Structures are given as structure tokens and as C-alpha cells.
Length: 172
Ligand SMILES: CC(C)(COP(=O)(O)OP(=O)(O)OC[C@H]1O[C@@H](n2cnc3c(N)ncnc32)[C@H](O)[C@@H]1OP(=O)(O)O)[C@@H](O)C(=O)NCCC(=O)NCCS
Image 1 (cartoon, rainbow, N blue to C red):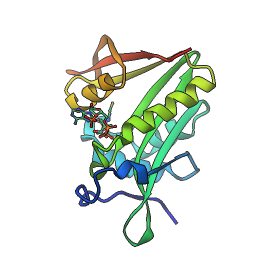
Image 2 (cartoon, helix red, strand yellow):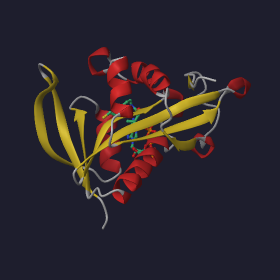
Image 3 (cartoon, helix red, strand yellow):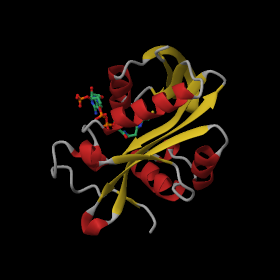
């Protein structure tokens, strides 16, 4: 059965939902649910096309982790995911998406710990990512998990939409 995206109306269901989400690696076809969640998580200018999402998730060197959970009527839902790439000794975070109903329950922290660990095991020594200068929630999140601002990338997303480059050294 195709993976559905977690519904947005169940935020108050549980205080510690993350314990009920299971992390797993990418399976062929997952990009469709990932793309649907990306449309919920980002404004149009920051969204990936279907082709981009599939390409990033299925390209050689990609490390993609999904968080899935049991939804209503025993349906398996996509609660979040993270797509990364290994480039030489650097793990690059292509995107990180958590469904609104699952936010602030530690899911992104788990997803990032998992991709960092996988990337480290295949040779990454540091992590890198870009985040929109106006995305205060994501900036708070990355700083909370040990990333530090390294540079500004002007017009990174589009004209006048700048990014901050963040880095984190992985433990030896
Ligand atoms: C940013 C995002 C991935 C965070 O996901 P999350 O699962 O809610 O994050 P976590 O619950 O693991 O948060 C861990 C810590 O990060 C910080 N944090 C996360 N979201 C925050 C927010 N909205 N405001 C302030 N701090 C926040 C907190 O320190 C939090 O710990 P706490 O809840 O114990 O205080 C999520 O909000 C999201 O998907 N946003 C839309 C897509 C996006 O912007 N992705 C990143 C693009 S680069």
C-alpha cells in the first residue's frame, strides 16, 4: 500500500509521539509521499518538484531516512524524512521535513541523529546544510542540535531569498 502523509489534525493526541514513529531507509516509490509532505512543509518557492525529490532520494550517494507511524485505520503514515548526500568527507542535508502533527516531539532530532550516524559510518567527517534566513524554527532546531553558522549564501533560493550555511563536525 502507498505511504500516506500524516494528517495535520492530531497534534494533541500524544505528548511523546516520537516513540511511536519508526525510522527506516528509503524504498523505491517513497519519493511520492515525500514530495506530498514537502508541499505541506514549505512555501512554493522552497518546494522540490516531483522529479527533484525522486532524483535526490534515489541518486547514488544519497542517504535518506523516513519516519513512519501507524495512522488512523492502521494506515502507515509518513511522519517525517531527511534526505542527505555524501560528498567526499561532507554529509549534506538536502531536506528535512516533519509533518505538522509530529513537530516538537523530537522527531527531527532522531532523523538527524540517524543520518549523521549513517553518513559517519561511510566516511563523513562533518555535516553541512543551507537554511533560509527567514526560517527561524529550523535555525533554532539546527542550533539546538549542535550546528553553527559558517557563512551566508546570497540569493541562494531566489533573488533576495538568502540562505545561511551551517556546519557541524561529527565526532571522530
Ligand atoms: C524544523 C523542523 C524540521 C523541526 O522538527 P521537529 O521534529 O519539530 O524538531 P524536534 O522536535 O526534534 O526539536 C528539537 C529541538 O529543536 C528546537 N526547535 C524545534 N522546533 C522549534 C521551534 N519551532 N521553535 C523553537 N525551537 C525549536 C528545540 O530546541 C527542540 O527541543 P525542545 O522541543 O525540547 O525544546 C520542523 O519544524 C519542520 O519540518 N519545519 C518545516 C520544514 C523545515 O523548515 N525544514 C528545515 C529546512 S532547512
